[in-house]
Length: 385
Image 1 (cartoon, one colour):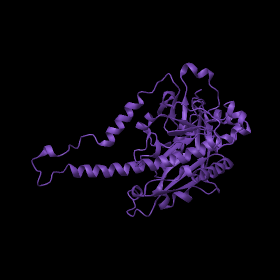
Image 2 (tube, one colour):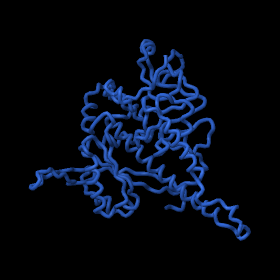
Image 3 (cartoon, one colour):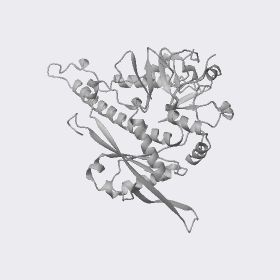
Image 4 (spheres, helix red, strand yellow):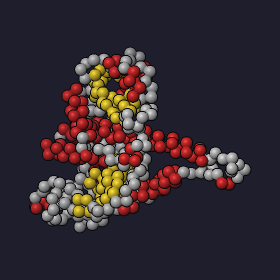
C-alpha cells in the first residue's frame, strides 16, 4: 500500500458488456451518477487522514461468447471466444501493463445479453483472467430483479414500458441502463468500503495486540490485562445489529438491500403520519393540485421510524444531527437521516427524516400476496390516511 496518505491508490475496474452501443451508454450514465452530489464522499477530514485514498478508473471491454455441440452428449458448450477493448484492441493492452495488473481488482459484467444462468459466463470471465495469472480478481454480474427469472425476461419487460416509465428510471434506477450504471457505482463503493474496514480492522488488531502485551511493571498481574479473546466493541455492535434483524415480520412487505439482498426492515418500521399534503413550499418535482389530491405523485423514498438507526446508521458517523444509512452486512450506502427533517417527492415534510431512496432496496412481498403484485418493480412506501 502507499505510505503517503496524500497519494491515492489506483483501483482498475473492468466493465464488460456484449453490446458496444449499450456499454457506451452505461459508461456515460456511470459518470453522471458519480458526478451527482449523492455519491460525493463526505468523510470528516480527520477520518480521511487516517485512510489511504483510493481513486478508480474504468476499463471498458467487449466479450464475445460462442458455443459448439458436444458430439457425444449433444450438449451445447459455451465458451468465451474473444475479449477486446472498445476500440477492438486485444486485452493484452491492459494486461501487459504492470501498473494495471497490480491495481486490477474488479470485473463487472453489465448489460442484458448475459444468458441464464449467468454464473456460467462469470466462470468463463474468471477463467480468462486466471489463465493470465490474475487469480485474486472479483468477477460480478448484474442480476435480474426478484420478480424476473433472467436478465432477458427483465429486458423484455423494460422494452414494453412507456416512455414516461423509462424516464422515471433516472430516479428509480431499477431497470435498463440506469440499473446497470447503479450496479457498477455501488459495486465500486462497496469494494472501497470493504477495503477501508479491512484497514481499520488491521489497525485495531495491532492496537489490541499491543494492549495485551504486559509491561515490565505489570508482569505477573494478568488480571490487569484485557484477554485477546474478549469481544471488541465492533463485534458487540455487530451482534446487536444481527439481533435486531431477527425482529423482521415475514407477514409484512420486507425491504432488502439491493446490493447483498439482506433484509433490512419491514412495513412496521416505516414512519407513521407520512401522507401527502398541500404545502406551498418548493417541491423537487412539480405536480398539479389534482394529482396531489388523487395521491398519484410517487414517493421516491421510504421514510423509517427511529428504531432502524440501531442497525442502519453509519458506524463511522460522528455527527449527532445527521448522518448516513448503510446496510449492516455489506456497508452499501442506503440513504440519510436528519433530525431536522426532509421533504419527500410527494410534498410531505417528514420530521425526523430517516430516508432510503426506493432505488436502494428491493421489496419482498409476503407469499400470500404475490399473485396481486404488479410486474413493474417500483417499491412504494405505505401511505397513511
